[in-house]
Amino acid sequence: MTSAMSWNFREFSWIGTGNFVELARDITFWKAFTNTLLYCAGTVFLQVPFGVLAGILISQKLRGWQFYRAALFIPVVISGPAFALTFSIFYNPEYGLLNTVLGWFGLFNHRDWLFDFDTALPAVVATYVFVFGFVMILVATEIDQIPKDLYEAASIDGATWLQRELKITLPLLRHIIGTCLLLTLLGTIKLFDVIYIMTKGGPADQTTSLGTYGYSQYVADRWGYANAIGTVTVILGIMIIVSVRRLFRLHQSEM
Image (cartoon, rainbow, N blue to C red):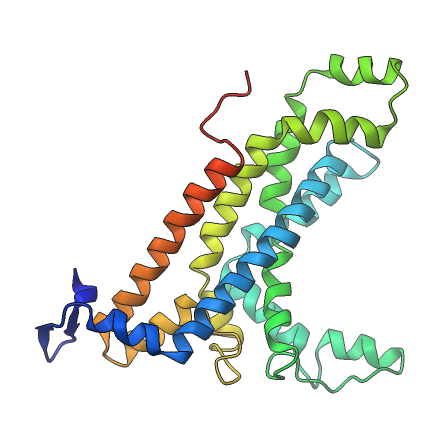
């Protein structure tokens, strides 16, 4: 309702679709919208696949698996601001670990990763892609529920480990993978704290998202416009929910 108004602490007036018409013409909004989709792509093609792979490997109970499980889950329990500050130090052009390591190999080691137009967006994407421990734990837990008889029968038939994982494990993980994808995507479209702390959406809106752009409009006392951006975010979330549920048939039982 308030997205159809021009309001702040000084004024309150009805403007109908005015905010949405302005959004359609707002270059920065479309940049934020596109970046949000790119962040979502990082979730789909990197974060969730890494989590699924890690979950499968952890479920094999290989030597040291408990240590690796704990280490990979640590980023999940760290707060967003602490995580963002850690990576800000990691990317620091003067004393950051990344440039230091590159310097050891004689490579270009003075790049300002978070404020270079060519690297800012990939650098921000890389920070939250590594938070795949949540997916890993859910996948590993689901694998533990799969009857071991299925694997034993496949082994007797001569199936290799890879064939067992492709033919048995992955098909039976359909629902949990869909659920993980849904949860991570919904978290990604409202991504704010990591981006704001690391770059504030810069340089020149290169890393801005719907969350950071909406916040910038709110602090500029354009509350109605910020709410219109929030409305678009909600609509995008609904579209994601419907699409993922249909794609992974989350409404259907495995039986």
